[in-house]
Length: 271
Image (cartoon, rainbow, N blue to C red; front, side, top):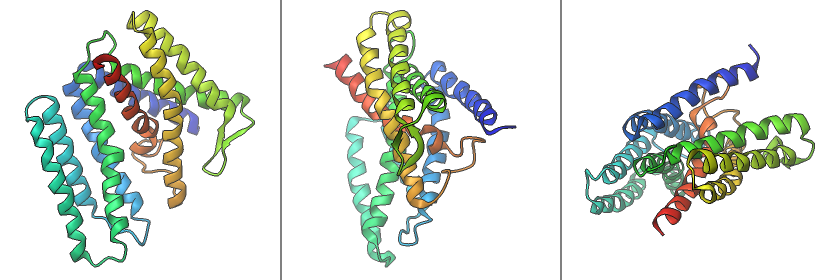
């Protein structure tokens, strides 16, 4: 089986699982996305194991990540009071204090990698579930967001494959081209118009601006993940998804796009 065929099959199954869980409601989405979040967090810390001068406990990182994730979700579903967020502050400072006994030569890097893993992986997955909890549209906002991200990824790939000549960021991602990038953004804008005009009617402005935000963010997310992998000299973050690599490889565009879309959503509906 060719790599493209394998990517299409895996991507289709994964897309149905992700979109199906979102449409089924925030509780089902929470279960599915929690599994992705845990795997993604493990992948991140395993990647950093390749750096001989960084020593981060994967178990501690995953434990803290899950703790913060559950805490935030508990507040979103109003099971926990907002004041519960204050627990996070002494928790992080306690983690920093642990470096006193580890005797590692690069404590600052250890702390930075530990915290980055939580910010980069845990927060976006949580925000996507919180978005679904706030949904009041025919097509859930988080589903529309994911469809725009996938449209950008897919069309950037095919337009770049067909017409791509000018490299976008050859130092980080040699295969990406300006033609593919612009093609992805144009098709994302068109799909945003379709969602706002024919699916979530009356929200054309919201979805067009969402497409304007998501197009570049998806590209930056892809480039950022490529930067991580290139600096670590690895091809994929994992191997759990045939043809795609790991969870971080598949969610790279989403992880960077979600916080920006979430901010735009809150400004638009709660200004």
